[in-house]
Length: 517
Image (cartoon, rainbow, N blue to C red; front, side, top):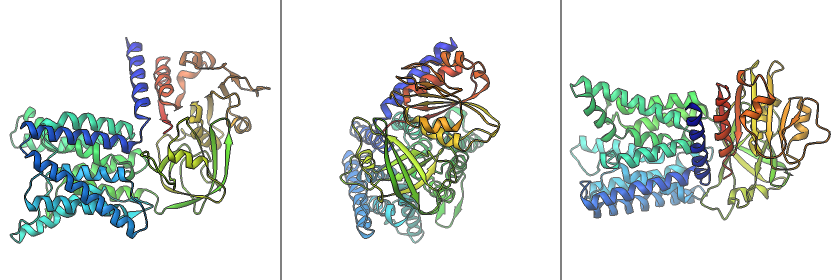
């Protein structure tokens, strides 16, 4: 029974990874937000939501127009071009935070929040990226100004209400938040935010005598806990790189949103929690944008390219982590200009080495990367990832599929002499990339590729061409159950082998998925 469940789980994850891996995270978020917006407008039309559908349409148009105007005006001032798809995401978020009404205070609030959200991408930015979630910042500023005006007796500006938190929309929001968190690999902080915020609210509600079932319904049906976690906290640009750092910012955001307090015009709100969490996240990250000069761009095999980059200042990272780079190019498709690549070089190396595959139908960013020449420049904006080298004296199995070999090259180069690594490397190329580097490393390699290398280095084994199973690895490596397994590569392979390794007794399996987008 357990084997069947693991197999079904692996198959499901493989399918989900393949589907979501075709699209960048921002496109997935945009599509899900549009689904929520359309559902909300339909519910308004049929009376399931207590808002005028005309007001909903007008508020949406104002949010989109104002956010685009703010982004393009600030971009022009900073001589930068906004990424339209990302700006539209901010516009949709603004729309969902302010009650859709045709009254002037409500429409003005939407317009001001949209302008701030759009402009903040360039005016409140470092390292080539915004510091705060733009929609949260816009809502926070409008909320503070509205509170100040209200204290003087003016209602010229409406407060953010997060009206998206309503029972009819909860199924759309919950499923969408789960998809976003999974695609962006931020399930842990999203769950942490939900748990902390819900726990605080349940203590409050039950303390007032509210029954537990009603407390749960109110917390999840009428408060923006799930939406704030899944669609705003989850933004990769404003999250730190390590899991424990993400837990800290998630807890801070949830606590500030849920524990009642008031200091003048500033009070406990989701937008304040998000902005404070963003500030903490920024403190954890790179302090400045790092320019990377291309030293060489070398084809390796049929579709693999290695970049050797000279950073203007050190890019601090752990073996196995990845770096996000911004790729300047025109024209640009909807998959954007940023890409995250595992770092091939060991920490402390003078050059930063990256490698990537160019798919049959590459994105505009991959096409531009493959065409780079010595002297061209990229920029590094953040270092991310918890797929890092195991402990000094750990026995580890490293399983790589295709370009999934890249994080392991850094781990192997930086390994301690006490570490016991065995690498399993599957490649569809007759001469897989990095074989010479692996030969020099002295690490035992179990290789699966179309043709066995001649001569096969001492300590290596060839599994033949094509796919292999966890069972075949267990046969080749008797001490497999006692090792910690790292699996890196295409979504289907990672899902299948992760389940298979657990099936043959491996207790600890860590995953790193390469979607190829």
